[in-house]
Image 1 (cartoon, rainbow, N blue to C red):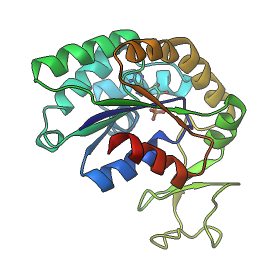
Image 2 (tube, helix red, strand yellow; image 1 turned 90 degrees about the horizontal axis):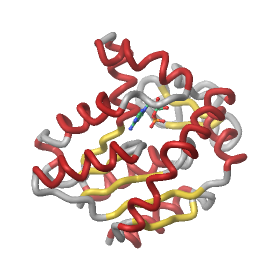
Image 3 (tube, rainbow, N blue to C red; image 1 turned 60 degrees about the vertical axis):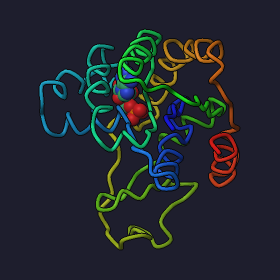
Image 4 (cartoon, rainbow, N blue to C red; image 1 turned 90 degrees about the vertical axis):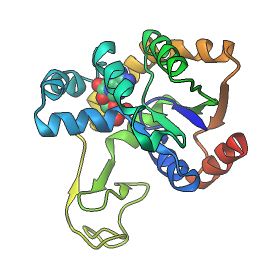
Length: 214
Ligand code: AMP
């Protein structure tokens, strides 16, 4: 099973992708994670992407298409994968169709997580993760039980994405509405699009997604 998790920044794609990965043994392909790793490693792609990401704009199509084309060839994708944050433009979606057809693969479902704009900026601007185990938190909605101590691993080191501030979150949301939301008719026409209410609790969203994929 190959899935696309679709939705604006802060809709909960990352959280649900990890649950799908664990529940179904799927590979998790997040272009945002791959680009952040490239920035941290200082590669050519990372150098090109850094300022674009910090401004909340999109990295050029050919860069992300190249990254995904290589990644879907890795053996862990043979048992199925979840695309998280890709495609984000119509040319990316078209390129994905071509490259999957070449590999005799296809997308089974595109799951759109729907969340109201006002909620998204608040969610993104308050989120942070444990630097050791990656557990996700939110300043207001889900802080660690004990201040500055990770519930999961006990570490007291936390990190925040450079683009998770209110200003960049608004820019990312505008980019989503302008360049990414126009993809919805593309997948609706292909008969693949399914919507879930991303305003519901994390567990309720998981249940709704499971009902689609099972
Ligand atoms: P994300 O972690 O999915 O929120 O992505 C973080 C940032 O990485 C985005 O705001 C973009 O600058 C860049 N990015 C991630 N995926 C893509 C993509 N498919 N196309 C273009 N830029 C991307």
